[in-house]
Image 1 (tube, one colour):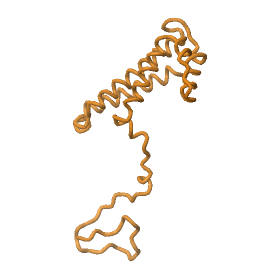
Image 2 (tube, helix red, strand yellow; image 1 turned 60 degrees about the vertical axis):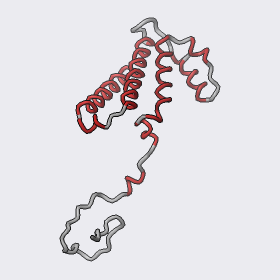
Image 3 (cartoon, one colour; image 1 turned 45 degrees about the vertical axis):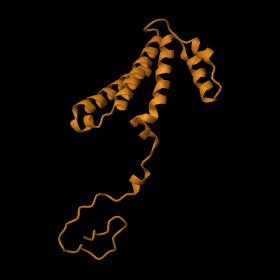
Image 4 (cartoon, helix red, strand yellow; image 1 turned 180 degrees about the vertical axis):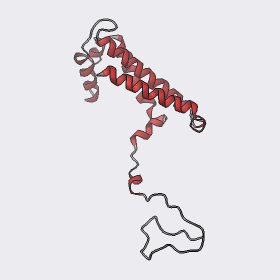
Length: 153
């Protein structure tokens, strides 16, 4: 399951980076923070994939992350971190955790911050209205809804 998710995510980030590099308007808006974010996203993805392969025994010896990494994450979420649990895990899991935490640290300074905002107003805004500039009136006599009023020049 983790391998399939890793492959799908790798394909997705490859397409995103390809679009950012090949579309001139998008590339012109790329900042240094965006580039750093992509480095950390790809590094987190690759470290997680290596951890998945190592836990399955494909690379190195088999490891059950549910006994060490899972309880360590829960200890962080309950604000009582237990580092000894992570020390018992393979290096791939520790590297993945460090890169992932670094990604959370740089989160507010990148475009990832937009994932924390929901454009709720977008759901209730009127559609795009194309208006003519001639003096003719609009057909019908119904009162216009908010956002659909005629523009007065």
